[in-house]
Amino acid sequence: MEYTYEYEGETYVFVLTNKRVRNINARMKDDGIIHVSAPLGVSAASVRRLLLAHGDTFRKARIRLTERLAARPDFTDGSQVPYLGRSLTLCYDTVPAVLCGDVLHLPADSPAQAEVLWRHWLQERCYLLFDSLNRETCECCRRHGYDVPLARITIREMTSRWGSCTPSKARISMNLRLMQYPENSIRSVFFHEYAHFMEQNHSDRFYAVLEGICPDYRKWDALLRTHRG
Image (tube, rainbow, N blue to C red):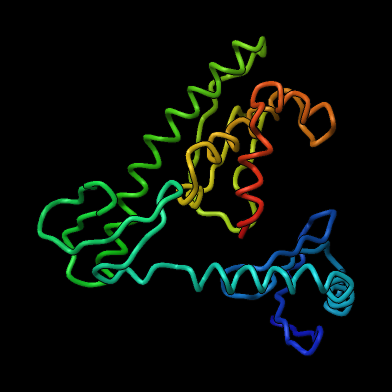
């Protein structure tokens, strides 16, 4: 069921799901709705009070969401799409998808078809790049004396984080949206997640490990923080 609340003259919608969890978790998805999971017995009124107490957090989340959606490509012939820190121009063509300089030729004749082809092309590039960066990061950690596994990588689109690590399963999840940003920013996320194999928190020790294996981490992470969705 959907509920609403007012904050600074604007209406926000949230959906409450009660489940067997310990904490209340809330995040705004691309539909603009705040999706909340809460322990059994927690009422919508209690959640509303919590969201109001953190009203500015979700006000800023709405602003970021609006900006991100406005920046989405329309995939028309001649439009631009973000790729590894630069812009590519889409060109409807009859040849298979091929990148020539900063022009991406796609065998498309409509924005809908171009978007499908673009995503397919991007995912192929993403898997190749992320596999290479995964191996590079693992080798670098081992050179620094850390006995880390070669992580199994899963790639998906996420709205609230760039990556996550499950040390017990030697698995790292990476956000497909990272393909918009420079390769060094993507590399910084790999180092961040690999550091969790040594320190499963965000303590001072964690950042000491991280900056030891990736001295420029804060520089490239700053770019991602500026544009976090």
